[in-house]
Length: 134
Image 1 (cartoon, rainbow, N blue to C red):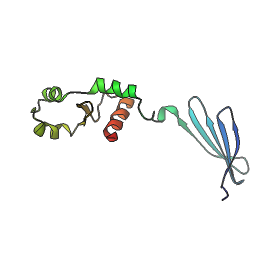
Image 2: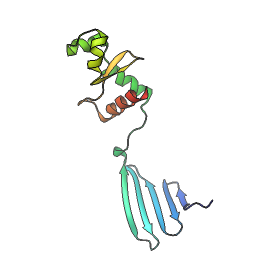
Image 3: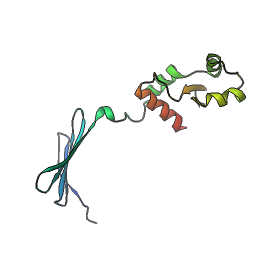
Image 4: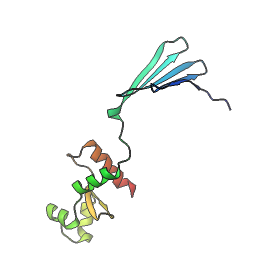
């Protein structure tokens, strides 16, 4: 099966050129700041250019160290969080209230905020990862 494209050039400067059957060439360039995509038509005119900056890319799966730091910073034991929020202690009553804004991790037996105005972007990514990984 014939591919609709072929890699024309790949060099050690982290650049890649892809040709689409003579109709267009795409250049993918890795820079210290992110990635640049340029599309040129068969006349050599740039018809589209865009950049994706590193700052806009998620950092990916959290490391074990990041997870442990998050847990030690944000985790609260059941009685601790119930006292702080003035919720009744029995799980049968308080769990339903807590689950609105918090999530429970059985492994650490602690509650964590689903979101927080003082989370960093990375802490929010870690919270989302932990919430959805169980």
